[in-house]
Image (cartoon, rainbow, N blue to C red):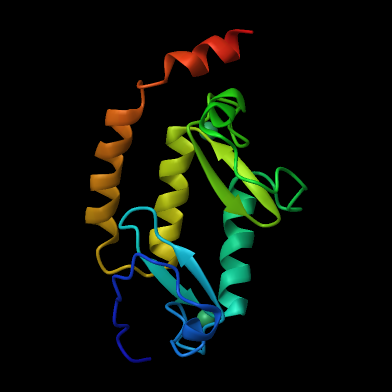
Length: 153
Ligand SMILES: [Zn+2]
Ligand SMILES: [Zn+2]
C-alpha cells in the first residue's frame, strides 16, 4: 500500500468528491467519511472499513447491537443531562455512531478519540491525543450553571 497522504480538510466532502479519494484505512475507493475530533479534519473511508470502524466504537461503548437512540443531536444542556452510555458519569460530548447520537463523559470521549486516531492510522496520533487530552482537562469542570440547574430538577 502507498503511504497515505493526509488531507487537512475541515469541511465535509461532497458525496461525489469522497468517491474520488482512497480509503484512509485500506486504500480502496472511499464512499464515507469520518471527522477526526482531534484535528478537525475529515477522512475518507470505504464503506466496509467505515462500518467496521463504527462497530468497533459501538462495541467499546457496550452497545454492540447499535440500539436505537436520539436521531437528532442533543442540545448542549441535553448532553449534560444524559449519562455517559459507557460508564454512567456525567456526559460532556456526543458522537453520532450507528443509528443514533451517543453521549459520553470526558474520559470515554478521550478513549473514543484514541481508538479513532489509531483506526485512522493517523501518523501523528500520539501528539494529537496529548493535545486533545489537555483541551479536555481544561473543559472538564466547566459545566454551565444552567445545565446544573436542569440536572438537579
Ligand atoms: Zn477501506
Ligand atoms: Zn464514560
